[in-house]
Image 1 (cartoon, helix red, strand yellow):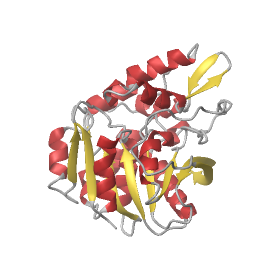
Image 2: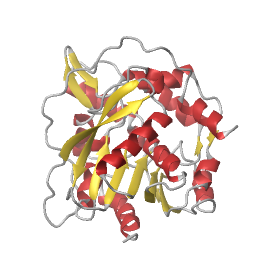
Image 3: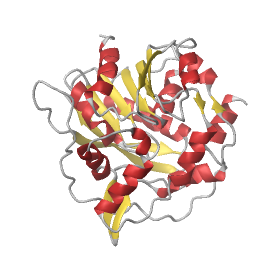
Image 4: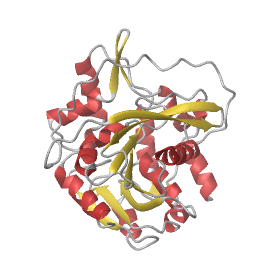
Length: 329
């Protein structure tokens, strides 16, 4: 299968004309301060600045939100991009740990978090996300960045890092690689975009704990943080903070076989770290082992007791990422 065909099968469907779609639900009430324990630091790090940038896609303009940590004038920038149904606040603990070294930028990919929903749901695919991230980097006014990408965020990073003259100088791929298993995509397709309206916050947290069980053991405070940043109060209850339409491409173009993106991975020239959940069904051990021998010959770290994907919320998971990134000077 060609690279283009693989990408189309994974995240694209034949476009349909724009149709009137419901606007994003009203924004949530002010969120409580995250209660998960951050990695050890010398002194408190200020809360992030909330910003946004306007991007253009195949069917018009849309706005991408992002959180920014650390010195806004720091020329060293770390971009952290989340997984399919998640948002940039997943990286709060990693951002706090890195904010003394970097200006840390954590975007909400289109249709997630505080970012705008796309009118044409078939636009929820990798080319849109890559273009948006290039626009974001241009807004940051830097020539190069370091990149941490979880799952979908790692695929976006891989695509950018494979291009000539790209801005990524160090790349961390969190539980994703050049082979994406059909089994994992089918599992994700069963729930993405199908979350119910929850009668209360407690029901929302139970749901997130259930669908995110592969994250492994998290404290009650960490689950609370993931829930608080993932849901919003709406008429009649609580809803997930993402556009249900992000699941449309999965259901229109079901993936029946593993998707191989080895040509993309082998074109990457920057130092690369792969963090793998030891029980992951998306990034298999044999694929990760090949990643250490092919292309950028990535360094591999496996996290025991975790599936897809490590949350990077405690120091044991943050430490190898921090050490790898700071090796670059």
